[in-house]
Length: 328
Image (cartoon, rainbow, N blue to C red; front, side, top):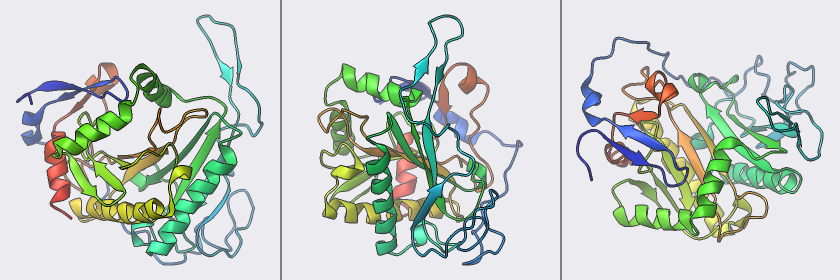
């Protein structure tokens, strides 16, 4: 492996990242964020996601228990099914996009994040993810299940929740993964096997799942999570693998929360197989993108060179993985 500054290619997307390990010691006098705090009491009368409370739309939440979902009151897409309508080619191409946006509350408890839930409660969340995929997948080109944890990542409400956006077009980042997978058969499985054999970037592993810092990770403590056996979507998981996923999620998020002793902010989401793809073409996987770099208040900023040229990181993926493993 190259010492000093070098570039690494993400074989899953075709993108490159500059790695500059000597920059980890540079002084920081720039912007600092407010440290992430705990979400508060078990019930908050002002929270629009707590049971029985009224949302901004005027709708009232039921007195729910456990995991619960509703249609987003402020969706990103028009709710109309059908194929995307594109304009003719030219300098200003555009297309109509349809879709559904839903909010997925993990629990009725305002202060219960995924890591705080019981094993059975996490299984309930996983089953909710599967139900969303089963319902929306046949009707839309792409179903994006995701979560923004913490105000630093744009979460508009501290009540632990995720979202699902189903849309009539395949989004750009997914198209990049699809293009790489089409060009190289068994790409993801071969890449995962190489990471397992290398071992130095593995963070956690159980009987069915593995989490690792990717060789060409962009964010300081970025990880991926995937099953150890072929599975195109979450719907392909058998009961044992589903049970192991609940364990892997808790272990990984618990490690994150130990990095700086605060609830670790991140954006995470699932990439299930696109419609018409199977386990020979695709492996279901999750991406975790946490922004923190030096402390609970100093984040990685994607600016300047990263906006104009390509991604750059200071901490090597190997060092990041070793640090995370040390917090098991």
